[in-house]
Length: 366
Image (cartoon, rainbow, N blue to C red; front, top):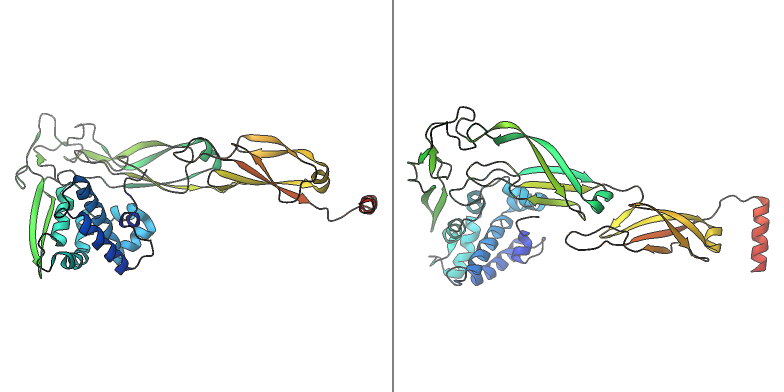
């Protein structure tokens, strides 16, 4: 459900890779996919992806946040400009080696303009993006089998019904922004040592939309949203596991732009009977030593009630009886796993005289 790949996977390094190993790997990938060297559309997209990954994991502070909270932690705290500006020195070190100190097509300016110029990051210039929202929920093992419907009320920004989220008072409309001439973008250039930094960002006057409200709506003040409460509903599919899942567009509302994402953090509750291992589940069944020796039919719990299981004569302790297809599904795969029942043979701690005599007789007969 996540819209982004893991940054370490993108770069092709282990999570515990050193800064030098990460730098060397990015240098290798940048040489292969830089737009000045590789003109294919696929290369340009991959260059954006590896550059974003490197901007985060080459920065010690951002890397710690990402390792702990994943994409939700980084995206919820930093804008695209923040991410790349913080790693400008790292990019210039890499591209000085690849292209020389004077750049010749490399450097932080090249990386940032390539990324922003193709609408990367948090919605691209001209389209504001709502903030991501975090929802935490627990599920039972039965929910893993059947799926679960989640509903909750969120207090925050809701669409303004009075203006239909346009922000305009009745009878009025939006006009072209004077600050950016209707483009929604503004550019700024500055120099730091040998490097020239060019940033392309959304116009502050119009929020990147290119148009501004001529006469604001009274209910929302021209924002298109107001404070309120909205009902959020979604379904968790069968086979869900512990982790974070992203639901694009289900987060904070951004009129005229891109809604934020809903990050769902799922925790599977421990079960009183079962232990889960992937698609398979395990449980224990206690039997007497007589049942184990002579065989018996016993009742065992499953996720859908109880089942009769035949214990063969001479069953040994810790034997695993298999109930095929009685486990849980795995997301993206058909069918269910199996249930395994571990036979625990209970040996009595106290015996009556009669029981001792019978066991003595049994031992002598053996």
